Length: 280
Image (cartoon, rainbow, N blue to C red; front, side):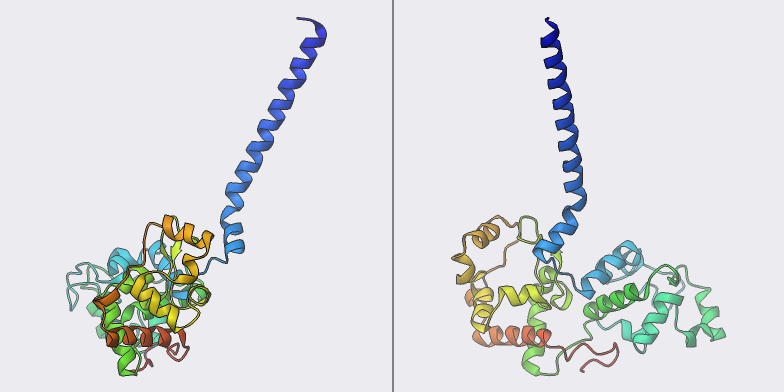
């Protein structure tokens, strides 16, 4: 091979190596920044309750309180023989208010119980005892965890009979399995625009439901005309793995109005009062 040719081959090889490492660098960088960029560009939404769920998951809460906090494991020696869950109003049986719930999370029990010799003696008989997370969770994380427990507790209910009936229908038809407890959102949905099923609390709902007519159409048809006509929106709706079911005539007009009343109540802020003071 001629000297000039060898030089050309060497330069080509160096160019290809540089190009490879440049592409590799940007590939790794893209993977690293993608989650943050996606959140910024798409305005990926999270609610306090959804963050609380993630905190409970990584903090081991569901290990004892059961999947999603829906019911705990056996606890020989305790009064109920099992660890309490978060649902069915159970939290109010062991925490009088939000402050006591906070103390349960941070210290394992409220101050009034920890100072009671009879309570301390009783807990010695339990196989499982609530751990104290003080020093492990920040104030913000405790707030989010309480938001999740509130949403899961079935204690935060509207006073309006129609909206309360809508909540019962949401339970009956499984709305909260997809939209999260109290419609808090965040349940994963591969292939969808933002990667999750939108809830009823924040801006996602505002973008997807502009008025009662669209809300009614979502429930009855599982889609709306505005998004059907939009080519990009239509593409993501078609490729998402979890679809909004079309309830059509499976709901009576009264049931449809009740569900809509409950969702409108969720969209209000009146229910966001301290735990233990929710509407009866």
